[in-house]
Length: 126
Image 1 (cartoon, rainbow, N blue to C red):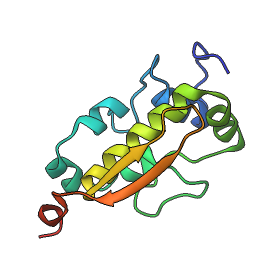
Image 2 (cartoon, rainbow, N blue to C red):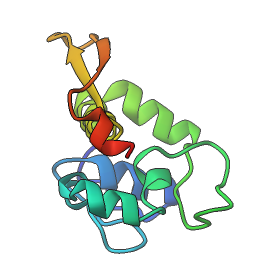
Image 3 (spheres, helix red, strand yellow):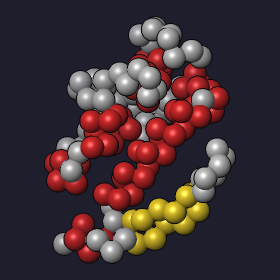
Image 4 (cartoon, one colour):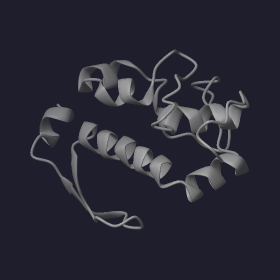
């Protein structure tokens, strides 16, 4: 799928949200970069972003406007490294928020190598 594809299908909205060339907003007008730049306090206060940055194939009772993973979304993420890189950014940010440090590999196929408790983890859970 090309980055220039402008369909407004729900699947394409999610792909466009994660596409770094498009950086489309979610249903609340937030971009991925905006959410990932939030302070931990903002992440703690908001509860409807998690289903947006980590969508599921089934709907959420907590965020009825959250995007859903479809076969089209799955294929796009499987085929496009830039989408997977953005998802990895989301995972890295949420790990930091929850008090974990992440060591990763450098190659395209490398996933999380090691997840450890961060020095600041106690601050997150007090």
